[in-house]
Image (cartoon, rainbow, N blue to C red; front, side, top):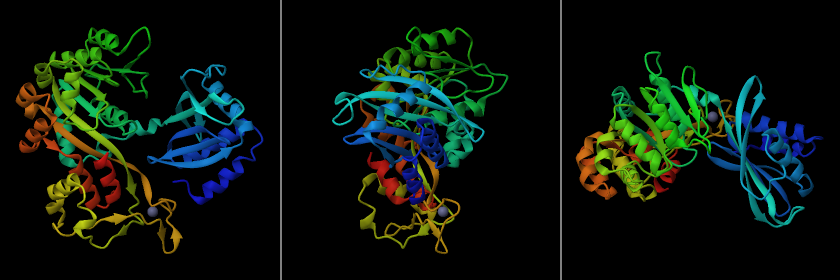
Length: 427
Ligand SMILES: [Zn+2]
């Protein structure tokens, strides 16, 4: 959340004399608080600038209508985009230097219908800047928040050097960071590693990366890279039938394929691949592991507050959470009638906490669901179109570590709040 001091500084933003110094100040605030996105949203009486930090949106400042086109055109110019194109969605990128670090900024614009502004209606543009911080791919696999037994499951799948490993989760859930962390964990001069992205989000030493374009889509790139003798191939995202089929084939041929797929849970992945036209027999043979991920605010350990034991009525309202709590509760000394958890503090000895600067949180941490698909290959062959049966078999055979269990383990450890755990299990 943007704290009071930042809001004060944001108010001062409006006093900036030039558009370049205004944008510079916005970036300084966004980067200082670790924002992942900056939104420029037309509203009835101006242009609202908002930041997403640790997954939460907060208003930064609102500019008058008279400044709207100057600010948007300036950003589009930085990203080498056509300032006159206002009626179609466009995208671009630029690099931004700040305190010795370089940030890759992805820009997307969408025409929106919003009254007000100089040009009424469709000519107004909503602009979102996504800040890619290369430091996030330098986080080793061991520091993403995977519990030891989940790391072991992942390590075993990577060690096989063949088969398909898929990361899933909503937009902004850390799939790319996890994919790159996996690539880095196996990077070695003894292996030929290739990456295909749209475009690749980060640079990786010693790894060739191909950028998808109109002339060469994901499937065409994968086919071409497969002729270049890869040991490990990372494909940014499976979007269509072609890519789904090509990566599954490649996994069966003995390559290790890492990719991502936009799904809500891991048990639905085999079904999604099947719906994308991949044969169930090939999925059961090729699909090795699925990691489903969310990013959740991490409590500041210096100022978090241990709550009184809660009665079940206040937390057992969600079946998943209850199952998750039961799965891990005993090993944390929790009973079936009460649990212990933590809430954000923000102060120490009456002063704002120095570590989290009074916010109560220190960045975000991954909450994971890991499915070992190789343990349920027979079920995938016969019942792939019934995700509930797949889930049942996975639970029975201990092939899945459910999201709710991971979330509750992190609640009991005081790493995340119970409310955040509930929120990701509902969605
Ligand atoms: Zn703190």
